[in-house]
Structure formats: structure tokens, C-alpha cells
Length: 253
Length: 336
Image (cartoon, rainbow over all chains, first blue to last red):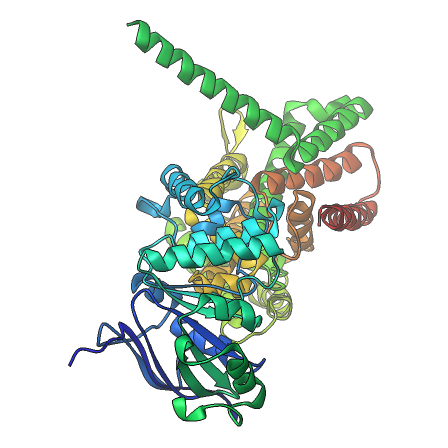
């Protein structure tokens, strides 16, 4: 029988010496679904994301895409599979221009590695125009001259550059104003409408609750719950996070 | 026809606007500041002693500029990748390279071209060690290149027993003493290397990635930039250029001399920093490094022309470095 999930993590375990950062975590992601990945600090969210993105390799466990096992050995491999991430600290380079940031690690080049700046500038502008709608800065502007929201949009534009199927947003609103947060929320919904699946990591549970279809809750490296939003409440999600699964419907995992 | 004319006019207009924007950008940049400083220094030196502008002196200045300039380009590639990357071995590699190329040609009768290739392979190999030590073993480049500073200098002395190796073939001397249309061959080599470096730094993805690594190495890893490979390559490039300078210096002095190149690494670092390279990495200018090397060369030449003791040269250089770095730190703090 064909799985309802296009992306699956199976028994992912990641150890750093004696520390078990992820302990036997399994889950799946459906097409055009927004999944909230939540948990306290140190729950293992960022480690899990790094493995999905190929920055770290699991100690044990596998990832599957369209039912086939995939070895995500580097961020470049992840991107080629249609998986990309926007990190909490945005992973931007302030002195580099917008176009250099958007194409960092994936520049379009000709022979001898010659950069195709003209095409890249056009593509960068196109992506930003869709995201920013109102005012798009010149794409050769250094990122350090942009506002927090604009930087976020540059980071998202980079993640959307290639045909992305699964987008991971790690604390995308932590450094933003209220208006900018709303804008990110609208953007996430728009991406879902385009058929893109999203793993959304956030500390503001109320904000996450409004956006997502499902919650995966981690605590101390373990998955303690996997709940559809329609079957739970904000209070229960908070209770699960705070208690580490001791309170709430931990049988749902 | 009329439509075509309008298009042409529009294109010309766009081009001239672009040129104006380019010039304005350059005038406001650090590169312009450093160029102005260099011109002021040249004018001052020329006024104090008009012999500065004699053909012979300009050729001498050119030869020395080539030495500092090539080393500064290599040093800039290393410093820009950040993470404390620095190459303190360039002066000693210059000495070792000059001694080895002389040894191969004079003592072992290896043909000139093959000797040069062998020496460049050896110094590139030293660069590979520096790069892998930083990226794979996490040893600070300060330590490994400081080690090479001592080892390469020592090796040059051990090989020669402290004496220069002379009787180098005449065809080899052309690399250091030859002129093409009145221009010293080392200057032509410098300009060629500078052109390749500018191409590499600004027109290929590597320049952008080097700066990205220098600015935020964790982010560079996350976006899939090959940090280990690129960091290693910069050290190979730097020490390859150090080897080339050693060959040029040996050809200029007509001997493999174990004592040459003392403090050259400091001149290279100073040229790079004066030229706008941040010691913390991420920001660099090849043009600036060349201008920085020119400033150091002109100061060095001016002290000679003005009859000031050679002992003052190190004091002058040290002062220039401290002032340049201080200005750089203050400027960045202001911009932050």
C-alpha cells in the first residue's frame, strides 16, 4: 500500500559522544501540509533539522522520499531532493549582496566556475518580487543594509530558489516585528497553497498553533506526540511540551 | 530606423549611467582612499628627491613591488577565509624556494623548467599541509605557519650550510632581472597574477564563497559551500605564490640565498590589511592589496632615497601596520 507521506524519517538517532540528541524518532510529512515541530530548548529540534538538511548524518535511522531510501549526505544533496531550510539565525552573509546570499552554495556558473551574474540577478529579483510584493531593493545591495523582515525574505527566497517540496522554517519569526510576523504567516499559507510542505519550528506556540495542520512534539531527544491540530487544543500542546509528555495524551505518539 | 536609433540611444544612456554609478562607487570605496594615499606618497617622495622618478629607480621599485604584491595577493586569499587564517610562512618559503630552485639547477643539473615546477609543487605541498592542518586537524594556522616559518628558514640554511648557491643559468636570471619593453619581468608576472586573481575573486563563484566562509563559516556549511576544500585551496595558492616569489628573488639576486625574505610575511599581511582586508576574514580587495604592497614599497624606497638608516625601515613598517589595523577596526566599528 502506498504511504500517505512523501517524506519519512525512520528511527532517527543522533548521538554526540554520550549525549543522545535524537532518540529513535520516526515521522512522515504529507504533501502541502504544515507540521509544527515543537519542544523545549534542547529537545532536539535543530539537530533533527540538521540531519534532514544533510549538515549532520544520523548515527542510526534513514530518510525516505517517495518511498525510496535517500542518503542526505550534504545540504547540496538535500537541495537537489527538493528539501531546503531557513535557519533561526538565517545563515546569511551580511557583507555579501542579496544575490550572492540567495545563490550562496548554488551559484549558476559557466566554464571555469565563471558566475552567471546576469541570470542570477534576474532570478533573485523574480523570487524577491513574489515574496516582498511592495518594495524590492536592488539585488546587489549588501544584506547588512536590509531590515530584519527583508533579511528573512532573502533567506526564504534562497530556500525557494530550486523546486522545493519540503521547506523547513526554524524559528522564522523570532527576531521580527508584529507586522513582519504576520507577513511570514501569510507567506507560509501561500506556500502551502502552492503544494509545498512545511516543517515549522517555533517557540511562540500560539502563533504556531494558528498556522499548522499537525504537531510533532519532542522532549529530551524523543518524540512524545504526533497530533493533528483538529484533535487537540493549544492548552494540551502547551501541557505536553511543559511536562515532557507526562501530562496530556502521550498515547497519541 | 527611427526605432533603432532610440534603442541605441537608450542603450548608450544606460551604459553611461552605469559607468557614472561605477565611478561614484569607486570614489566612495576604500580602494579609492588607498589609491589616493599612494599617489600622495609618490608625489611627496618625488618632491623630496626627484631621483624617485628616474627610470632605474622606478624599475627597482617595480621589482620590489612585484615581490610584495604577489605575496600580498596570496596572503589576501588566506586571510579572507577567516577563522584566524593567516600565513606567517611566506618569507621563509621565499627563502626555501630560492635555495631549492638553485640547488636543483646548479647541484643536481635538473633543467630550469623542471626545477621551477618541482619547487612550486613543493611549496604548494606545504600550503596543502597548512590547509589540511586547519580544516582537518583544527590546528590554528597561526601555529602551523609559524612552525613553517622556522622550519623552512632552517631548511634553507641547512641545505646551503648558510652560503648562497651561485652560478645560476643566465636564462633563469631573466625571471628576476629581465625587461620587456622597459618593464621588469617581475612586474609583468605580478600584473598577470593580479589579473588572474581578480578574475578568480570577482568573476567566479569562488571569490564570493571565500568571503562567505570568512564572514560566517557555519552558514557557509549550511548552504552547502565546500568549506574544507576552499579553505585548503587558499593556503595552496598562497604558498604556491610564495614559491614563485622565491624563484623571482633568486633570479633577481643571481643566487639561492637562505637569508632572503626575512619579515616578508609581515609585509604581505600589512599590504593586505592596508588594502582593506579584514583580519577577521570575509572582506578583502585584490586591488587594495596591490596598492597596499605599492605603498610599502614606496615607503621602503623613500627611506633609501632620503638617506634614512635601514634600521628605521622596520620601525616605519611596524607603525604603518598598527595604524592601518587601528583605522580598519575603528572604521568597521563605526559601520557596524
